[in-house]
Image 1 (cartoon, helix red, strand yellow):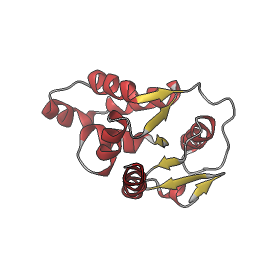
Image 2: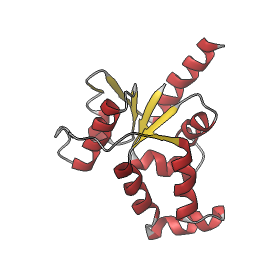
Image 3: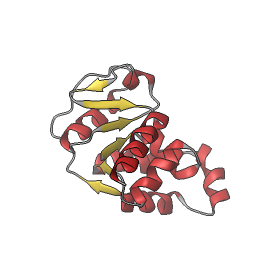
Length: 145
C-alpha cells in the first residue's frame, strides 16, 4: 500500500510513539510504501528545526538532521508534482500532499488536519487520520497472511 503522510504526522511519528510512529514502523518493515518528494521532505526538515522540538530531539539523543536522514531512508521519492490543486484554502501547502498522493499513486493521505480530513477523499484517494490508517494497514497485513 502506498501512503502519503503530511508533515505533522511525519514529525509525530519520528519523535513520539503512537499511530504515526506505527505507520513509519510499517514502512520500515516493508508493509507500506511512504511516498514523498523533495518539497515535502524540505518542509519536514524546516519544521524539525523549530525550537519547540529541540528538547525532544535532545531527549532522543538525535539531531534534526539525523531524524530527517532516517525519514529519507523510509520514503520512496517521486518528482515534485507539476500541478498542485487549489483545494485547501486554509493551508495552501497541504495541497501538495493531495498532488503528491495522486502523482505517487497512493491509496491514503494520512493527516490530523481537519481541513484535509473534511474532504474525506481526493479523487480516488482516501484521507484518513493516523489511527484510521493503522486499521487499514493492519487489515491488509492480516489479509496477506
